[in-house]
Every structure is written in C-alpha cells, then in structure tokens.
View: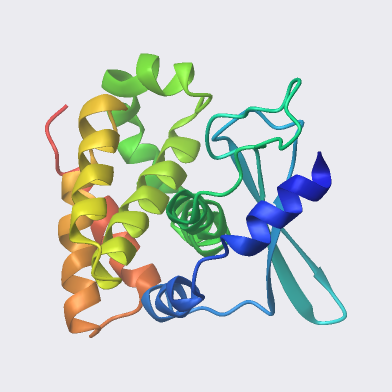
Length: 210
C-alpha cells in the first residue's frame, strides 16, 4: 500500500512555486520542506512540525489521504494521495505553521490577553475542530489568512475564494476578514515586516466590539 502512496505523491507533486511565494510573503526561509504521507493519519488531516539539526531547520507536512481510498479487493489500489491541488493546499497550511506560530508567540502576552475575549463567540466551533485555546485559534486564523493570500499570489483566484468561504462561513473563522485586510496591504506594499503586520492585525482585533 505504501508503494502506491509514494507513487501517487511523487507523480502528483506540485510545483515548488508555492514555497517560493511563502518565503517571500512570510520573509522567512527553511532549509528543507518535507512531505510525510501516512496511512495512519485520518483523511484530509495533517500536522506541521519542524526540527533544527546542525544549524539547519527542516519542516514537515505529515498528512493522511487527500481523497477517497479504494483498495480492498482491488488489484490496482487507489490510496487517495494523488490530488496535486489538495497536496499543495494542505502543504501551504501545514508548512504555514512553521512560518506563523513563532511570530504569534513573539507578540506581547498582554496584547494576546486583551484579545482573548474574542475567543468566547467562536469557542464552541473551534473546540469541535480541536482548537481549544485563543492562542491556537490565532495560529489557525493567521495560517489560513496566509493560505488565502498565497493562493491569490499563485493566480488561483477561485481557489482563494473557495478557501475564504470554507473558512469563514463553514468553519467559523470569523476574524479572517480583519486579518486578511491587514495582510493584503502588507502583501501589496511590503513596507513593513511580517511580524509587524501580524501585530497590527491583532491590534485591529483588539479594537473589535465584544
């Protein structure tokens, strides 16, 4: 089964253009970008992890199948890892955590605490998705905002709009419009750093009514 998985992933590898655009947008670089397909991770789920060794930082997207699997009693099993667009989309998300999380963590704790009241309206929906704290909720909001902007930068306008709809309407990431507005300006003008843009976006969130 794993030989089929590897064959599908290798034949459906997306162009590395999205990585180039991620590095440009986030103003960061990593030494390696690695994919770890897994038959033990639930379908469409992924995990973004990283480690540093010998002064090199390697980041990973460990992920389950990207679509429907068909393998029982099938001489030519389909393990569901052959969707190039879904692989790029999920990789943008999981790699995104290595670009985003430490930036959120660098924001003054007082500002994070001041915005924590915003977790109350979305807590139920976030907890159902496994996001149990406001800080994690912020990670997910900023990673998803980055996904939408990267998709636009790739010229995938339809994909960006679909992500926007899925995340804001279906999955209740209701603070994305505020965050995206700030990050789109940063993306266009590049007259500040990504961490400064993140700080500005969180300050905008802090000014929202409870």
